[in-house]
Amino acid sequence: MTEDDKTGISHLIEKELNSADKILKPDFNQKTGRELLAFYLQSKFKQVLAYDNKAAEPIFVEVRYDFIQKFSRRLIQNPEKRIMIGITGESASGKSTICKEIQNVIKRFNMPVTILTTDNYFNDISELIKKFGTFDNLRDNGYDVDSPNSFQLDILKEDLDKISHGEDVYSPEYLLNGTGVSVPKSKFVPSNKIVVVEGMASMLGENKDIFDIKVYVETDLELRKERFLTRAYTERNQDLENAKKHWEYILGAGEKYVKPFRSEADIIINGDTNLTYFSQILEYIHTITNNFEV
Image 1: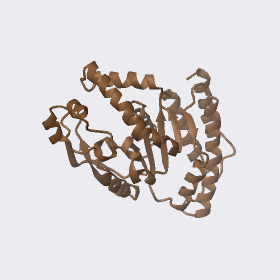
Image 2: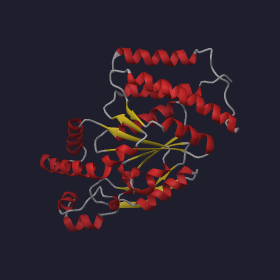
Image 3: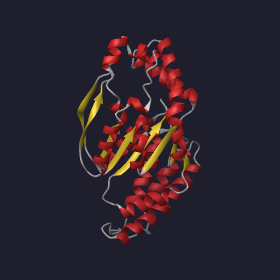
Image 4: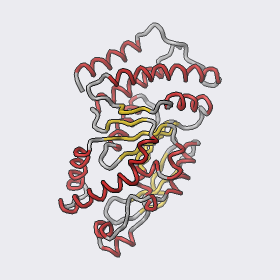
């Protein structure tokens, strides 16, 4: 990110806050108020895209042509429903990092947000790991860990339905200790106004239909490989040979199960984006959607 990008965003935020052309805050309880807000959001979001398009390293790679209108229409028709954001992408693309930054920015504005990772919905494979000795042995003997059949998709769909309608849930927890154990109803997941769901299973089967905003994170292949191998060595204690073998599996699984979703995404994000710039873009979006004359 260049200094011009930093200065430009800060200038836009300051200009918006000091603008004398603020509209009166719409009455969200009235359909006409929500329609006014939708029209306002469409024009402002187009400004964000136009600005980002000129940045040295844009965040938005692609935005679906009808996304803004579709999302605005949803806000008008069903304002009580939680805003559901699904984020997917191939392994080491930056999904978790993007999610954390969204969470950090939203929390700074005292807005409740829920982050749910679909990795906790892996099937319990503890008996299989006991049989084959290790996860790597299980994978090498043909177990397809990223297949839709490897997830508890029925439970995930049920939980997402409940959360989207304001009901708190307890999700499973998949233990990352190599045992393959999944603990049922282990993690409390509150149903906040904004819900961000991260992971490849978010877009598998019928789950993708619940999201108001579908995001695909895309990153250069060599950078993804570097991230993956570093993580395998430092976080999973894998030796280099096993890590490389796992990476080759991950590449094939991504092409088969994740990449096809790219064409269905509302927004494609650069997973190598500068987080400071990304944070400022989110701050600007918050400013323009909450800066009304009271």
